[in-house]
Amino acid sequence: MTGREPIVRRGVGRRGFLALAVAAGLAACGPGGRGATARLASGEVGGFYHAFAGLLGLAAEDVGEVRIERVTTSGSQDNLALLARGEVDAALALADSVRDSADQVFALGRVYENYLQLVVRADSPIGSVAGLRGTRVSLGAEGSGAALTGERILRVAGLDPSADVAIAHRPLAQAVAALTAGDVDALLWAGGVPTARLAVPSRMRLVDMGDLAAPMRDRFGPVYDRVAIPADAYPGGVSVHTIGVANLLLAAGSMPEEVAAAIVELLVWHADALVPTEAAGTQFLDGRSLISTGPIPLHPGAAAVYRRWHG
Image 1 (cartoon, rainbow, N blue to C red):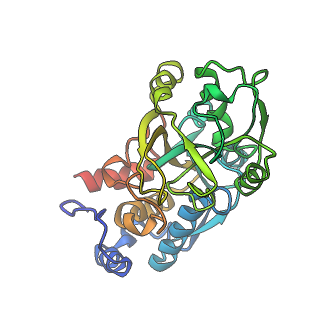
Image 2 (image 1 turned 120 degrees about the horizontal axis):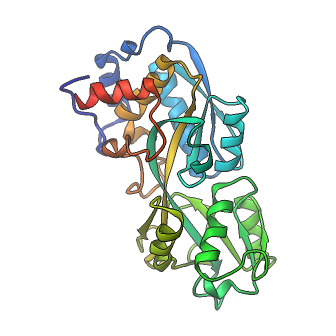
Image 3 (image 1 turned 30 degrees about the vertical axis):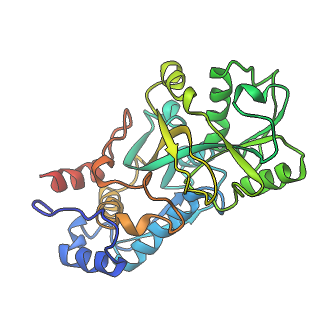
């Protein structure tokens, strides 16, 4: 791949990517990748993990080097447990969820940024995380990355998750229904922007969490970024700042190098085909940041592709 420029721009059609991929000869990944199936732990239906995994599977079908089997899960922590048990071959996970598994997994790439979104009813008086004291909050589904990150957010805001807030863990659809019915006062969701199920601003409102990004970094490490949700992300909404966390596509150490390479080729050459159509797009796959996986080492098969790409 030396001398070629990976295409990450919008406006290039999906078929154009396929033609380029064929011309580039993805078979260079080796015969061991062709026809192999990789089970990929994704996330909840309606979330961007699930959508991204589906698009990756479609791209894989078109190229034919590897088959991606999407596995629906609760999210990051669930995915890491499945990967550790050998029940899946690859997994999507928030970077902060991976910390305790850093010596057990390899990275295929940093695929996009998840935005933590704290949502209350439109008429709620809650205006900050500190204002959640004494309220009922859904901190993501059990086993999700938001469940872990949410407790950290509460702590840096000066709240004790076990005493100051009544915490529940609901999948997104159930959390939205509970918020609408008044059964919870707020929900935290880690996902892309926009998330279709969040009825912002008609019935719900985003709470600004930008001032907590720096203390999150200070206390828990550099995986947290201060990011903006633009006003036009949710039509009619207002701009807020929140906390972003990188998403990593991970692989088990047992994944053959040829299979890892075939998946990474999809990330490099099909970037714009892997962005869900409803996404704002700015927080998604960027060819330049794929190798920014922090303390998680690249899978040898992935590293080989990136070396050829960068020359």
